[in-house]
Length: 442
Image (cartoon, rainbow, N blue to C red; front, side, top):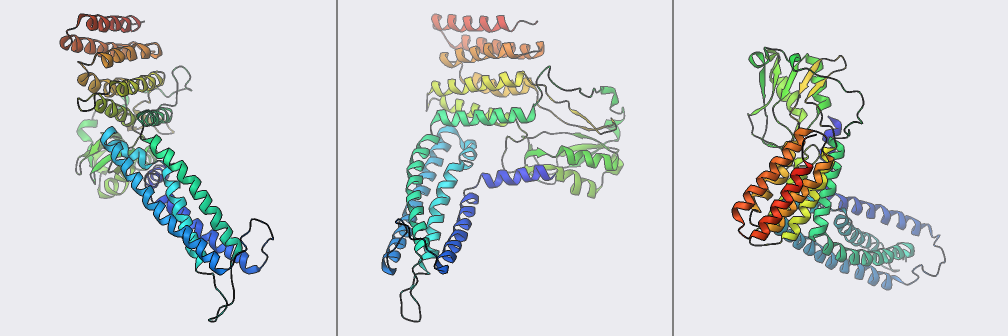
């Protein structure tokens, strides 16, 4: 479970605006102490760019830098909040997580905060002669503070450019599409025809008395199922000699007390096994993630498309961009082997049966809602049919082609019922016939 839990922890930290700035702030404290230690040794190099002023100049310089950093941080936070508000209203609240994971913004905020803390720590050590203090001007430390201020100005320029870039529709769509590609590579690594020797499975291996003698394992909490630790679940089944059928999959919402899985033999289901072991293999959270859920990035692209074609926005070009990305993702999926729901231990004993994603389910998630909302939008309807035609050459199974052909038929029938212009109807029919031609069973 370590890898799954560590991934969840890293995802939570990566999606926060405090983690990287905190690390950078801690680094600034270490840097300040290191530079002050060098200054106290008295071995300051005689380089032309090293600060050589007195105490008043050093205090004035660091005070100015520290004060300006407070103002810049406030401005940066304000711009970030505005960007998040725009993202939520334009692309949907589900996309906020993508913006929160933006490392660039986190580094920018961390740079400003680190510079502020560094200047304060160095400023407190500057002393003039008198009042029990000996003269101390940390020349190297002040010089580094000046460099940090210059670097912060460069980071500010980057931030202004970056903040205006990440809220553009093309950037958001491309980012979600990259997440989809990474998820496909992670969940479906084997390409059709290139997989290694695979374990065969037979339905008959499931005991005939499974349904009668198995007992359910109830969920210990509410939330979205973010991941299942299959390795840990396999260890549990081997240790207790169990057969477990998982009744849900990542991305689904779990209600406390609902069935997570059923276990055979049911007589071995007790509080320790269900609460302490099996439940711990199911990672719940407040929101969905793409770690084991290929539908999540697909749904994000669909959400952007639906908002774009809504009457309030009426932006079919953004919807068409999303459809193009969906067709690219589904083309990659069509070339992959979907994992078997049957998992075996090292001795070829069936131990775990899981729910797995299917090509039909992913295609339904990609096209159903867009099709339903875009019946009267000719441009979006035509692009949907063109997208299906583009996916077709990458399919290898007739059942997958049948899924795409069914969607093409629904798109054509629904749009022809709503669209009255004969030229538009002819274009839609032409695109449908082109898709149907390449989707013929082999």
